[in-house]
Every structure is written in C-alpha cells, then in structure tokens.
Amino acid sequence: MISLLRHRAFRNYWIGQSISLVGEEISRIALPLAAVLILDAQAGEMGGRTTAALVPALLFSVSAGAWADRRRSRRRVMLVTDLGRFLLMASVPVAYAWGVLNFVQLCLTAFAIGTLSMLFNVCDSTLYVSLVPAKSYVQGSSLMNGSRSLAFTAGPSLGGLLLQSAGAPFALFADVLSYLLSALFLFRISPAEPPPSARRRGHFTAGLKWLVRAPLMRPMLAAVARLNFK
Image (cartoon, rainbow, N blue to C red):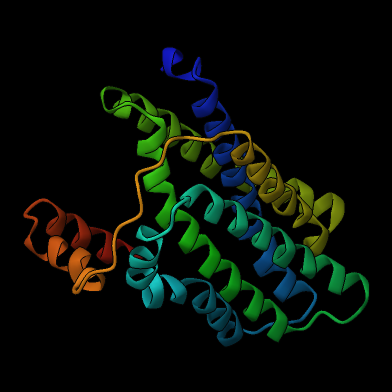
C-alpha cells in the first residue's frame, strides 16, 4: 500500500476521495437535521427527502453507465459532477441565510445531488482501473475501503460537533468544501483512460445481460439489494 501511495496520480485521487467521503457522512447527518430543526419536517416528509436522494440510482444507473462508456474523459465528467454538487449543497446554507429555505428545495437538492453522485460513481470505477495497475488492485481497494471505514466512523462524530458549533445548515459547508477539494485533486491528475465505446445496438442492455449471466455477480447483487431494504 505504501508503494502505491508513492504514485502521485493515485495519491491525489485517494486524498480527494477520502475528503469527499467524510464530507458526505457529515451531510448525511446535517441535511436531515436541517429539515427537522429548521423546517419542522414530519416523518412522511423525511421519508420523501430520503427517497429523493436514492431514487436517481434506481432510475438512471443503467443509462448513465451506457452514457459514460461513450465519454472520452470520465475524469472530466467527475470534475463537473463535483462542481455541480458543490453548488447544489452550497445553495442550502445560502438559502437559509437569506430566509428562503424550504422543504421543496431540500428535496430537489437531494435528488440532484443523488443524480450527480450516481454519475460520479459510475465513472469512478473506470478511472480507478486507469490509475491503478492490475497487480495493485487489492492494495488500492484496501486504501479506499480504509478511507470509507474511517469516514463512516469519524464523519458522524465530526458532523455532530459541527452541528453543535455552527448549526445544521452551516455544517453543510464541510460537505461543500469536500466537493471542491475533490475536484481540485481530480484536476491534478491526468490518467490515460480507455477509449470511449462506439455506439452499437444493445449497448444499453449489455451491462444488465452480463449481470444476469455472471454466476458471481448475481448473488452479490441480490445481497446488496437485500441490505438496501433494511
């Protein structure tokens, strides 16, 4: 793992992703609390806001994957999604400061950020294999999973501290900053990405067919789907 961190491109990628993961965990606490504490959102409304954040993955993942395969630079797409999420998340504390924040804006913001996050994640897998040699996949995955575990552990605690000191809307500035830093570190790398896929018939459904036919992916997909219902 230390040897992989000596590579400047991967190191920038890993640092940017790690910061973004912590920011997302902070907003996972701050955004719902902003709805409850400031807008007096009820249980049904909170369910709607959560659905708005998750439904883009259900609706657009397959088409987004087919679209991303035809892009010349997935890194550029990720940069745009980072900057888009930066602006969208910043709109919440700004609207609160101006006294115009409402529940509809929170839901629309959650939906838009969920859509951009889904597109970012679709492109991220291709960028990862462009940065990491095949022999170092396990090392790279270990580093990324370590960052993810740290974010899951430290992010909520840090979010709680920010909520106490700055309040729910302004704690979101930590996530705003994380998207900006993620974009900055992505900007500093320029990997040799695979060429875009040519348009062809059946490209949209190729991924679904592969998932259905792959004996290893079917149970993994079913397990993840089951966990998401919890």
